[in-house]
Length: 250
Ligand SMILES: Nc1ncnc2c1ncn2[C@@H]1O[C@H](COP(=O)(O)OP(=O)(O)OP(=O)(O)O)[C@@H](O)[C@H]1O
Ligand SMILES: [Mg+2]
Image (tube, rainbow, N blue to C red; front, side, top):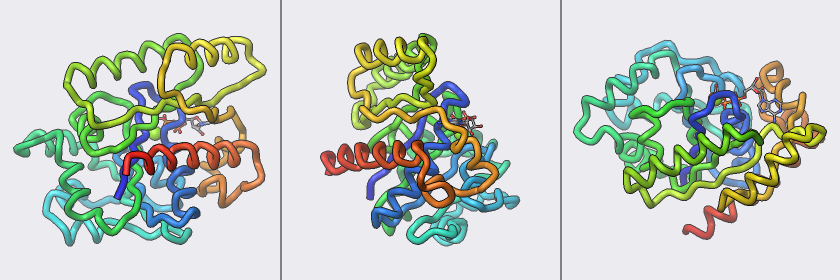
């Protein structure tokens, strides 16, 4: 089992859009895939057509296997399942801090119960918290959507510094350009600069596209609802690139 996390400290950069589309594509490419929605906003859960939970899922997760497996829901698409978020996820940090190894709980749960999946995709909230610290230990690969701007470089470098400061070396960061509008000079220029300054940048950019915004209306990944749009092809290319990186880490 491999784990990809979508993370950026910055909000609204396309983490959830990528998590949903990549998880869908992984399933289309034959992998048994679980999308674990770690964000109390529950946007990924919504996009996959599920309703956010209303039970005390955090306590349930803490209880062990039966409850963990019971919380996983099927989606409308083969091989794609989802562990929905709910508003109680806002208490996840509190719960984690009470455990003996707060930053390792997601990793522990995945090791114990996630073994029947080929791939787990974590959609993460835009914060530095105990929850997000967990993904640095649980993920094989962290895919980081970056909007082409100067501020994005800064927040990316903060994240690299955090990982170095914490001596977290097992996880590989793969940034990619997100919401790119090539009609804008600033996007074109920042894109070039980001490629020069950030090693490991994936080569596939995700374009700014109305089709991605429309996912909220369709409540479905692009490949399911609007397979012919350019952004769908971009996500597929991105998935193939990431799959290759994961394969190399086997
Ligand atoms: N490639 C894109 N083109 C156009 N709009 C996009 C694109 N990607 C995301 N969006 C829109 O931008 C908004 C934020 O996207 P998304 O929720 O994926 O970001 P996020 O990083 O997960 O946000 P948060 O930090 O709040 O979790 C949404 O309204 C989404 O529809
Ligand atoms: Mg999100």
